[in-house]
Amino acid sequence: MPETVDCRGLSCPEPVLQARQALEQVSGGTVTVIVSNAVARDNVSRAARSMGWQVAVEEEGDDYKLSINK
Amino acid sequence: MRDRLFIIIAGAVVGLLAVVLVLQGNPVNMGFCIACFIRDIAGGLGLHRAGVVQYIRPEIIGLIIGAFVTAFYVKEFKSTGGSSPVLRFALGMLMMAGALIFLGCPLRMVLRLAGGDWNALVALPGYVLGVWFGTLFLKKGFTLGRSQELTPVSGYAGPFVAVVLLILLVAAPAFIFFSEEGPGSMGAPLILTLGAGLLVGILAQRTRLCTMGAIRDIILFKDFHLFYGFAAIFIVALIGNLLTGYFNPGFEGQPVAHISSLWNFSGMTVVGLAAVLAGGCPMRQLILTGEGQSDALITVFGMMAGAAFMHNFGLAGSPAGVSPAGQWIVLISLVILAVIGFGNSKVLSGNK
Image 1: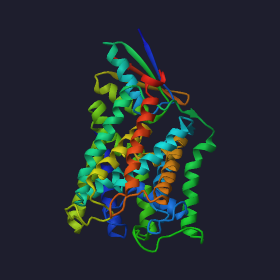
Image 2: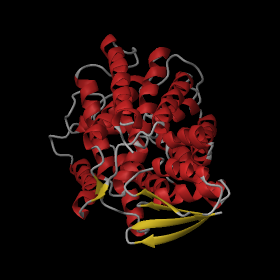
Image 3: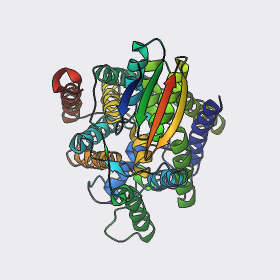
């Protein structure tokens, strides 16, 4: 079941904390994280990769949509 | 791997520039001190009248403009704000209060350590403790709320303030205060200080270098990425000081420092906790200001107000130590930080 975590307007480390929480609750599949700044985009990507997930980043207007897969 | 190398290089450049700036005239162990420099600017503008610490520090101007130009170039400039501005102003004040008890921001703590000032070795665990307290709040869902996208005018306010400060520095009108003695009278030539600020602004914008994040990410995520930059600052500044004869180990007689261990420790606990709640150390707030974040600019204004408050009421530490009133400020700061921390965590505030 795809899950979306909306972290728009939040600054690090909050997006990373929320994304990790979401990733820890599922064993695989797709988790979508939406962030609104480049720092959060980079940090969430790095955290997800270090947990063994793959990350695809898409720009969506002024925001970034991170599709995190395992 | 590339990212890791880049942040190590950025930290190394900060450490190297810090040594060069001292050689060229900055106060000892104060190649960079964001809190001290913002305090000097507050003095230069006459917000406080401590005659020995008044100067419009070009490093601060350079950091903001360097980050602004870089963020603009890589399309990361974004005008945002509106996330608990009053609390951010308060956190800026408290961050400055703690720094002026210890006599330095976290960056200067590292540089003092690299200069053999063992008082900084006492402050470091205090800082780590403060950051650890902060992570407890983060784990409880602490947030200052979402920021909103604002009109570009708000985003340009930070760089505009930096340009105005540069004009005031160069024009040096009579109403701007410049120290004639003490640390405020000491500074490397403008071209070097401004250039160093610009270069570090560029590097820090790209690498997100942050002296608080370095500790926080280890505690929260066992992520050492930012710590590599932090460590590089220390190692390069240490080598530089050893080579240039500025490494003088000991507790006593250190430049712009005092030996009251309890207050060195607890002052930095205040800084660490305030920095976690504010989302960045003093330097990081300047970089975010350059990126168009009004929330960071209001934190910087809070730091200026905090500096004025600490000096106008004789609360700041000095080489003689920390006054009883200054000691009370540490305790009061910790109480206010606890209120802000609990009040914005899921437990009490109902934040989701």
